[in-house]
Image (tube, rainbow, N blue to C red; front, side, top):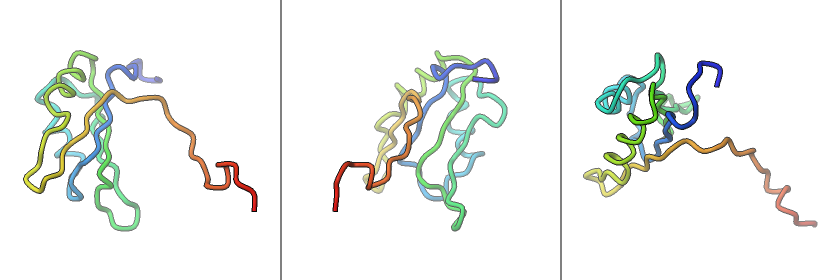
Length: 104
């Protein structure tokens, strides 16, 4: 990564509520360790401005990322949903339905 951090210190978060903001992501995850500047992101839908339910947190060190994963993965919400928190994996290329190999 250009800023010197590896994917070992970046976590992927799914199951976020639609009203989650970057500031709230920072507040939630900073309890586990230092976060890089602008390192807490709740992805937003371009049309609605609401959180898509997915976010990323770039911790300064991988120990903090592991603490957050252990503490918050499968964290339940009162509506019955839960958070998924895991180490960020490699980027996946987008596939189109036509790429699945069917012919008409």
